[in-house]
Every structure is written in C-alpha cells, then in structure tokens.
Length: 173
Image (cartoon, rainbow, N blue to C red; front, side, top):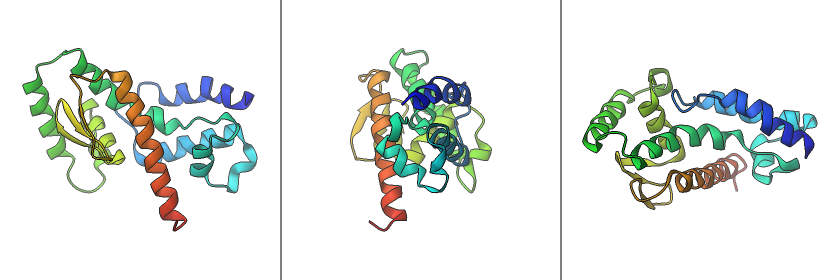
C-alpha cells in the first residue's frame, strides 16, 4: 500500500503532467500502466497488468484513468464554463474529426480538440456535437448540464469497462 501511494503521488503525476493538450497515444498509456504495476509490485513482471489494475492489487491506481480524463475533462470544462461560442466549437470538432481519419491518427494529433476526439474514440464514445457525448453504454451526456467532475467519473467507469472488455477478449471469457 505504501508503494502504491508513493507511485500515485510521484511517478503518475510526473508522467501525465500536461496531457490535456496532446493526449496520450495507445502505446504510451500501455507503458504508463506497466510502469505503475511494476512500481507497486516488482514481481508482477510476467503477470497481466490489466487484471492487476482491475483488482487494484496493493492499492494500485490505473494511470490510464488520468491519461483519459485529462483531454475529456478539459473539453468538458471549456463547455461547462462557456469559454467559447458553441458554433465555433462545433466547427473545430468537425475539422478535428475529418483530420484524424486514416491510419495512425495519434501521429496527426496536434492539439486539445484532436486529443479529445481520439480519447473519446479509444473509450468507444462518440462526440455527437461540441456539447453532447454518446458514451460506450449508449448514455447521452449534455456537457452544458453535467459538471466536469461527473464527466471525469464517467471516464473512470468507461476505462474499467474497456479494460474488462480487453481482458475478456484476450482470455476468451
């Protein structure tokens, strides 16, 4: 438990600092998860990081939650605080979605809107408009009505669902 607190207080914040702007590519999130598991429990070298993170073994916290919350909660905060006109945000969102079509979209990511779109795609979420999100479970969230804190909680739940889906797929459950 002490190692988990130290890792959560030092390594994770340093590794995820400033991630709301560029987001995190899939390979980087995988590396973050592996580093967190090994920092808390070194003998886990040959064990499944995903299962250990789901079980929260030794008080382990999944760094993928932070990595996926940052771009989405940043966008949600911008909408919640009405920092930009929603029609402008819709145009920017459409531009970002058009630009990210094709192979290796993280290589084309060059800002917070594209990081938001790619992070939503990774979770199975669909930005219907600048102010509306369709979650992987079909639920619609209106970002003008839901505070960013609640959006962050939804991200945490979605990360757990994605991890469970991945584990079930890998182990044919």
